Length: 81
Image (cartoon, rainbow, N blue to C red):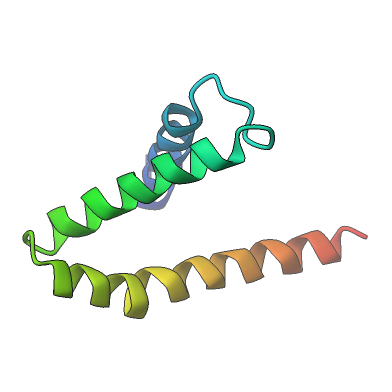
């Protein structure tokens, strides 16, 4: 399995665990609170428990990366029409 494929599989597994048995639309608030907590924990873990470094990683690394992935998804959806 390639690194990219493994990464995608891990992301899918994490999403399933995060959403659990909740309806992602009806229980959006609860799901987002869980995601917020998870992102905070992971950022602190990878940034050596340094809150300022974790906040910088969120702003400079994670948010732009998420925006880029959303834009890619949107462009693929537009191509299907």
